[in-house]
Length: 348
Image (cartoon, rainbow, N blue to C red; front, side):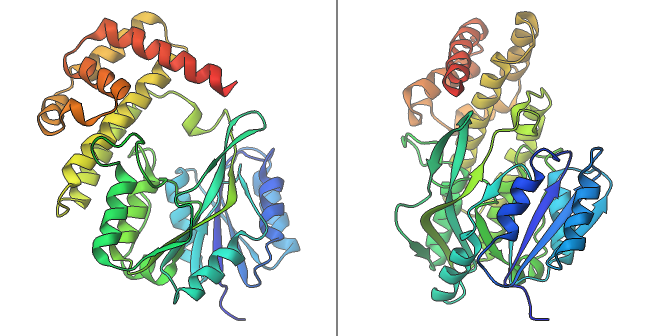
């Protein structure tokens, strides 16, 4: 049997409501030579049976059943048995256009087997309302190491004074990655239970070893809202995971000229988002203010405020950053409460 062109790894955990939609989009891919790896991460619903049935009906489908360890480790389990030339990742509550992997693979071939190719995606921002997100408005290939390092920095955070938080999207699912680079450099995902974002470290690690990375403007992936997913739930402990991520990214970019600036901005932005989520959580005012006080009193801000001037940020992020650094707890509370409620209203 010929080597599959793309192995698509799909972590599965309690998503029987969405799994058939995801699988329909994968089984109908126009690319000939696709491998689909379903990783049942200890699902308590009917997903294990559904996964086995897909494997029974279609030889392109492989199934792994494992104890629950989270998304990152589920992906790692899929990487271990993947045989494709490229590896891709799909979350099981999302779906893709049926031409996605053929288009990405063919573009990689045209560009001399590019090490990775990324496309745009649609992000659901409210029920049946989607926002189109693209990393580049035209096909673009980076082959110079200095340029690739620039992409890595722009993935982490934007340069000072730039309005958008970052130029390139963090998520791993709108990209195909050459498997020989993953295997040759033992690149794996961290657990999202350890770091605030497992995807960004994987992409940084991969691109540091890549010699050719490409972006195309076509939009193929559909990222759907799932109110029970990790990203939709406020967890106080995420702040500590962001701090661990901050340390990991500092280590990964210690040889980059502006690495320290970018990682500091990354942490500032992640903390701001965490506070917005706090403001729309079910915690009462006392617990919210207590959480804000704990964040502002964290010694990490003594280091960051020395390394990242507030004037480098756009106006509203700058105000929130100053409130944190100067421990203006009450002002921070009311500003972010208003911001969180506004974002929540927009999503409706």
